[in-house]
Image (cartoon, rainbow, N blue to C red):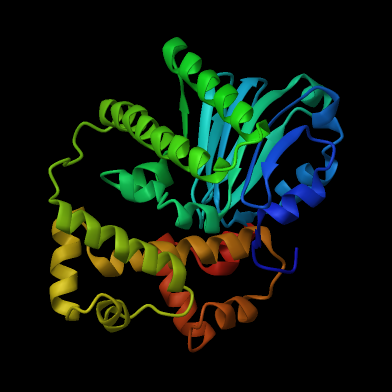
Length: 310
């Protein structure tokens, strides 16, 4: 607990979990099902997930049986039977609670997709959503019986294709994942619209695209860059015009979004690591501890030490 959340890739996961029954396309895609003793034997994975990690690709999990609690970006979600979880690159994930005595009863289907494979098939899940933060804020939903049937059909078809001696296997799987993206989008959009009817769903395509690009940049650079001029330059806009467009697209100011990412990172370092506060100040590129303390208290109502001790 002396490091920031580590980023892991498919190669690392496969090395940690050799006992899981899986089928793969190199280090680009892994699909499988884990249950019973195979869950109990996946101790390395379970130990790793007890600390915050980032997976650099997309992960899809469907829980057929069992129950656990997962923290995503410091928010806790109850994962129960028939739950579908999708994680996008950049999410901070931690397995916060599970029943060790009943871990062997758990049954789960998983699909892990590398960043390189996604790029090759233009598979960018957040862009498909009208608001990528729907997925960032709501990574877990419960499927109805019809959706469960479709999920099983997709899983079985994908597993058959991965195991077959097709020459164009990657292209076939890529098309299938694109299809799954649109289906997932529809399911998520319907459920989120029911829960959040006040969200404005009429954002223009251009504004939405700009907003997605801005969020992606903030996700990548928020630890070192907090000025509007940096992001405006990346997007070939003036800071004033970028601020106006982000406000129009999201209802919130661009600095608010940047601050949210910085606060999330700071909370994560305070909560999950033993780094001294002065080291956190250095990692987040604040000029000194005084500036960091004022920034953190203004956004949370607590000093960094008070937050850590709580």
